[in-house]
Image 1: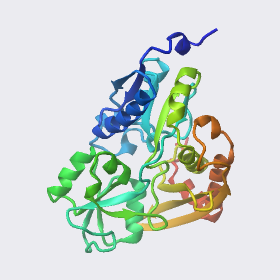
Image 2 (image 1 turned 90 degrees about the vertical axis):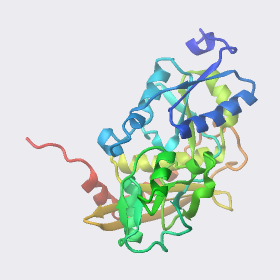
Image 3 (image 1 turned 60 degrees about the vertical axis):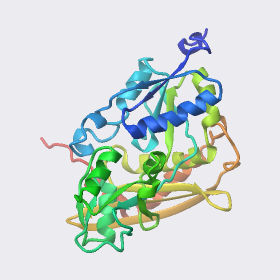
Image 4 (image 1 turned 180 degrees about the vertical axis):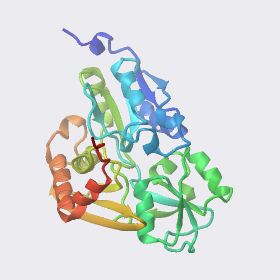
Length: 336
């Protein structure tokens, strides 16, 4: 018996859901173009998310994990859309029952960057310079490298943040390089922050195309857009995060990539900021990944090597001291 999705017919347009922000619509637009280039009719459905509606408070204050994706997932489960395009770093590591990330296209820049009115690096900023970021991971890393800088929170879309920078409210911003490049604003980047000095968020720069797990038509439609090397790298990163943090909003960074010798290299860090004293635990692991550089399609990235590598990295970080750090950061259960 055909599934609901198959009975809809191959001629039915693919309804692709996206957040309303310019960056989200730009990212989704790229996916839509790719699907159309493979002969699919596509409709774009814009969905407002809690994270977009509440840009006046920190992410943790409005629920943290999943605030940018839950409405899109609900639309998928209710069959109002057939696919959702996410910035993969916004998607919780615990998979929602009935849904799956079927495709991870080739990754954009995975690193954080500095954006300033004048060319500068983090090292060259004068003491007391005001740095704009609301990410606990970025805040901790700035404090570790330059405790003499002033870090102030900032929310809102990229354009809003850049306007506040240009108005003089901040001396520089720390943003994801991928978002700037996708918006055609790569020229605003004044310095790229790379590991080992500065670790990006898990899955940063990668998109995830989420569909219903039983939707064979969509599996086949998005399969040609998948980049095996990227898919395996972010699976390893997300496996590490899941093993470390669960639902903990801890400052954790990771980056997986194919090394020159064809092995998957995965590094990561856990940070703790206690009374402006930042402690950092770092580790790196490697493993061979068969055909990762040339394979295409989700059907060829099903080995468990990335997940095993992520768990191995998490184990090393925990053994080096991250376990006690993370325990202190987790919410305490109420007594009585």
